[in-house]
Image (tube, rainbow, N blue to C red; front, side, top):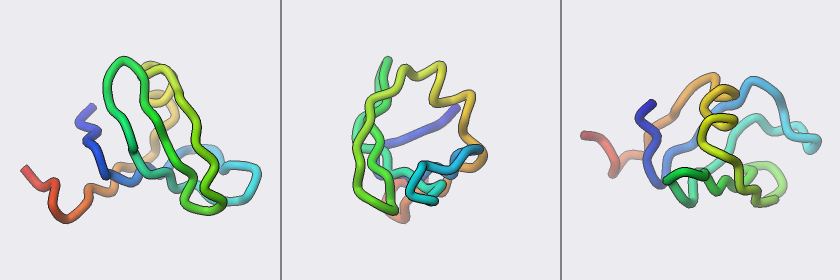
Amino acid sequence: MDVRLGDVLEMKKAHPCGSRHWLVLRVGMDFRLRCQGCGHEVMLPRSKAEKNIKKILHSEGNEA
């Protein structure tokens, strides 16, 4: 899966604040994500994060 720094991920399940959108802050074996609704940051293993992604909204400067 092509997830890059600065992308916004739409997840299958909503965060308790109600937002489904997460900003990618770090990519590697783990993803560091920031909730676009409340600003909460989490670190998830890549395998778990990729399983829960519904859609990737690539940032403007990151188009390859």
